[in-house]
Length: 375
Image 1 (spheres, one colour):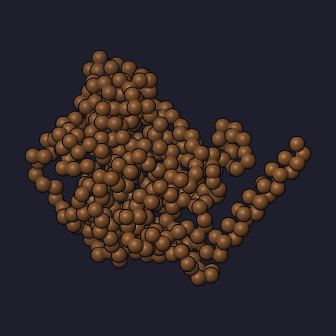
Image 2: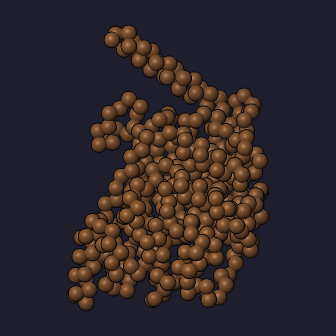
Image 3: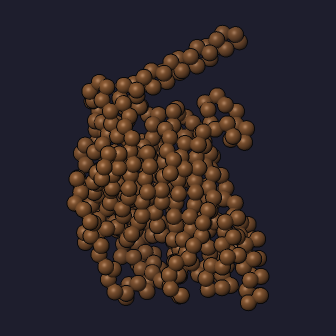
């Protein structure tokens, strides 16, 4: 036992150095407190990005063929300076070299290592959300592992890894001083679950999963069929090379899935964009009107969704400012469910913000012109 504990501690000290360290066989059959502490101490690299509207526009273009016709007309009254809450999924994407990835194309820095190598997206939460007031915007995302837990009977354990992401945006004319002068615009939790090697293939012979039906009827719903092309596009937008989204042969032979798996964050995006299409204003709105914007969402992925199989996105208003959204699989069972909080934004305030932005841009142009004249 002493040798086992020393081995785990050694892994903890080396866990952030090289890819092969993450993939070593754990010396014990469960995640020990020492190994948990080693994961919590891992230093995940920051992700710097100059944010532009292109990522958001490409995502919306990708989704237009899969969401209701009214989605084609939805625009953001605050102009291009406001990103919907789910669009942050396509910003601050991983920056791993291909040679540093695990065999399945995932980031080993987030993994507990062997034998827990089968990764799925369990859900997450956007705890804090604030609009981006201008583009391009200098920004930085800080990631950290904040919790590691083990659930399940012996031999069937699952390891849950909780990751927190904070995105900071700098003032337009600021010089970064350790990013302390920036504004934290979003705090997001991402929950990953890791299962044992081979457990997916074995599930092909397992008994069928019990179907859990939604407890309530939706106020509105929309049925769509995700395609391999949609999954490829979303993988590209999120810089995600996980093989379960791209390689059908890998899915069936290695993981036990019947087809390509729909990304967990793509499920979130589909729910939030569907709700935005229902709540947000169309291209033409009455003066002084207001609309609802999602500013907090908590979601869980309950069962896999697959390419080339129908899914139904649903939404129901629980009370003022509170919505429940979910996705049903082809059998009508719950696959994803979420709770979204909203607040109302007046259109007239949006117009005033736009004028202020235009005035700022004019002032900057005048300053640039004065500099050129001085030269």
